Structures are given as C-alpha cells and as structure tokens.
Length: 119
Image 1 (tube, rainbow, N blue to C red):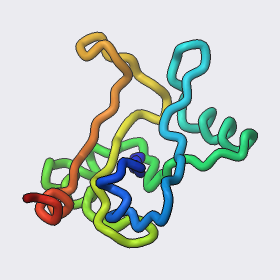
Image 2 (cartoon, rainbow, N blue to C red):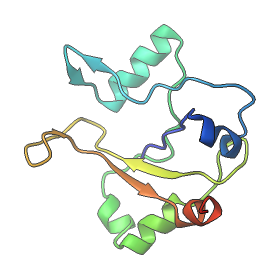
Image 3 (cartoon, rainbow, N blue to C red):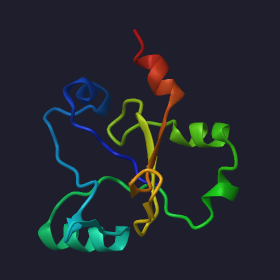
Image 4 (cartoon, helix red, strand yellow):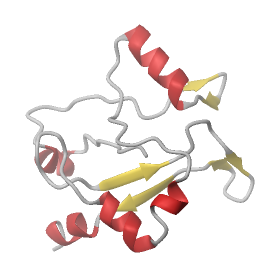
C-alpha cells in the first residue's frame, strides 16, 4: 500500500508542514510507470524523497476482505501528526487495465479524515 502525502495548501495544516515538501509518488521511464523496486532505486540514486510505503503484501484481499477493513486501514495519522487522508493501493509492478485505460491504482479515503474536514 502506498500513502500519498500531498502538498496542496489546504492539506498543509493536517500534514503539520511548515513549508511545502516534495515526495516522489510515480516515476515513468520511456512513458511507462516503473515498479516499486525500480522507483526506490531511482530515488536513492538521485537522493529524492519517496512517499512513505506503509505496507507491501501479496495477499491483500485476504488481509483486508471487506470495505470496512480497508476503511479501518486507511485511518491513522501522518508521521508529524494530523489525520491522514487515506491510503493508495497499487500493484508493486504496474498492471495496465484496458477498462480504465491506465495502470491500476485506488485510493481509500479515511472516513475520520472526511468527518474532521467537513463543512
């Protein structure tokens, strides 16, 4: 699972950022998204900060079998405090999906984050 830390102004407060920070979320080589291992190699070689990877697993459907389990996993706080927005889940190696005309990726938004920021 990948959590995306965003630097949009409205999120800076919940991320407890004193200034915008850059995190690598996706890298493309020759127009194609690279996998997790390759992205880690590139970030290390170029001394770039990658979004935190909270979990890597091969059988997430059995670990998180329901929507409720995924929503519970999406809850939490950023490393510096503040409710996190949620999690992003995508394969460690890109998988292209004809139906959506893009690589597979999904975001699970925390209900606690939504309730904290409603209004």
